[in-house]
Length: 95
Length: 477
Image (tube, rainbow over the protein chains, first blue to last red):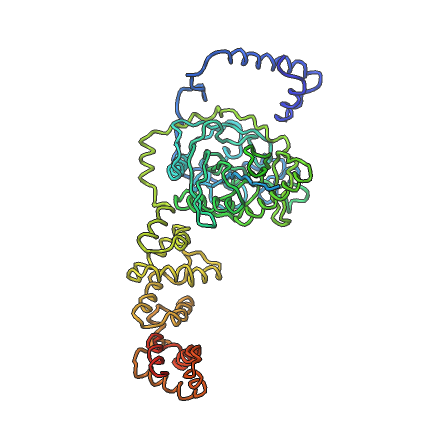
């Protein structure tokens, strides 16, 4: 078992996922299996292999630098929980 | 114990593109909130980012200017953290494979020595939105206009050893991105920002101390203040037996101190991974060669040329080449003044920059054009006016009273070079100063200045100083 319950709790917190205490052992087991598989793959010599950044063997297509979007604020804000004077309102966050 | 400061800087330069790095929304500053935030910037489901070619070109341009390696293949990654001004829950950045790697720039230290500062990397990423904490009755307001604005994050090596060096480095990068026209450098609007990694170690020790990362530094003055405060804090902590904690600290400009950012305690675990929405960026040699042809004369090259071609001191050349606009202005003055390079340097760095500073104006907004200033210098050169009267003329030109010739004519400032007229004034002055004359002749030579002053005063400053001197020497004998 490569992961501890505390690892799962930390990962869940970082991803803002609510994992209940009773589900934690299953996550520990399943995630550990995945990590162990990665560990198994680590045994392969990949010195001359370029790490894959994307499953498609292609390069990025770039777009020209032009403004193509129009202001659609009213439409976007129609589905927001709360707005005021054009800004989205969220629970207070401050440093 | 003697301590040594170690500083590395991360500069964020907003790239001067029309549209965002991954969407076609506008990047113009100051628009009404959220009117320039499209579905991609908002992170709505089903959208896909498409990379802006101009942002790539600008990154390459910067890389070439610092003698860096341009990566033939670089990869965009997701940097995961939660904050309301980051709607996707991740920032698209570059991690293991940045577009620009290993370059350097030179900074000039206070004693005139030149120091090379390594640049570890520069990578492309998107900016976050803005959180507004006031005026919303216990809530935070979010404006996503800035979300998705292209940034070039320029990461230095920990090569700086004082706050002053850090400022010199930041100024150099600022000057460079503006020369390259890839960033407007406007610090008030946040187009050019900086984080500082600061640590201290006992002098002579090789191992770095534990560092703190200072955020939120948006002026050259604050960089120096924030670093100096932090260095003192760390030294005090260590000398009293404590230890520095690796953390992110905010610089509070109002209080002049740094304090820990509590809410981001766990934020350092960003869980980067390649963004599956974006294919690797491949840059070909031909493209790099093409960008190379668009590089302007860079600040260091221009400075060197000013020293060589115009016989300026390195200091003068440094001041005049700090911005491309100022350098251009100066060269236009030299041309208008028919090659009076030294005189032009004195006037531009002295009277002109002084007046601009006082009025809070940019060089491009100067009320006196380079041609007009050059015209004034020509009148000094051909002895129409003295350097002292020229200041009076400059002042009138600054206030819109016309070009040098118009002002000289209108105010009757033409220098008197008619030796007969000057002689008359000299005789008058001597005649009404018998006491001073006696003392001078008795050996009190310092009184010569008195006579010069009286003659200049009587001629309202218009007598040619060299002629006045010669005549006085003759007559006081």
